[in-house]
Length: 310
Figure 1 (cartoon, one colour):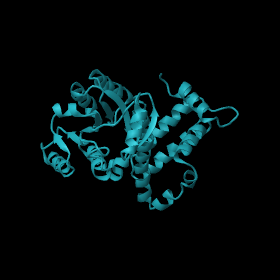
Figure 2: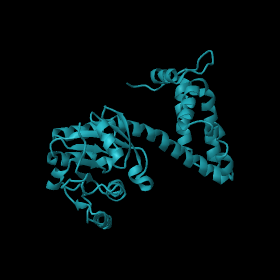
Figure 3: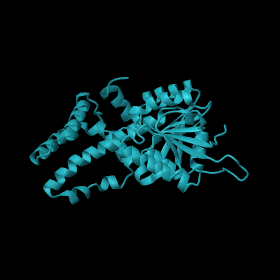
Figure 4: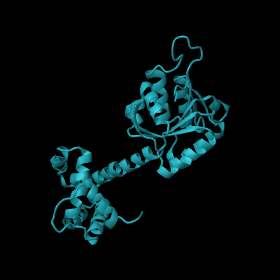
């Protein structure tokens, strides 16, 4: 399947959209003929409904003009010129953007959905695009555009994802093929957020308490067991040993909550951990032989006996 767009449309020209435009046009030299002898230049266009509506919208226009990117404030005829559409709007507006773009798409145009959405929302976006004759590709951005620009790592999924990944990597992106199932990339990002944002919230609670007690450096320095492992391996180890040690850890978290309260910190995350561990204790999952199961077996036990639901 050929994947060699000549006109790219960016839906949303905020941090993500402008970073992609800068990466393509300035850093990657993407504009102009794709090879000697080509007459039709490659172009980047943008659509952002906030254009010139306020100070932020005015700034969007200035950024676009500096990059020589044609920008409009509505979904119009210009969109039908695009071979590739990259949607980089906020997740809550992802379906609206897909629905507005779909009727205007060139037949067979590829639609890269970079929006932060759930698997179900990704399915809804895909349905809109496919009704308009477009080809939907699910993309999860796993880094930050602010520091990494177009090099922010991305996972890509969909029926035509392989060709898209090849083009993206040749054009300055850092993309990894996940597989043919659209929505799976978005789901990976969501579950990564459970871990990363969870650690973030725990860090806020623990480090504020540590600073108030004057032991911040000591707390940060006591994580050598985690430093000796990959983060993924450390989390997997905690889940495996949870089967054996949930009761002891539950009791400990009760004392941890008291420690935070004594320091004047509301133990919001700590109390949630305490309840979560108590759920495992009440399910009586501790093995009689005290042996730590494999990760797969631990997850099977937790799925069947602790975390209910399909």
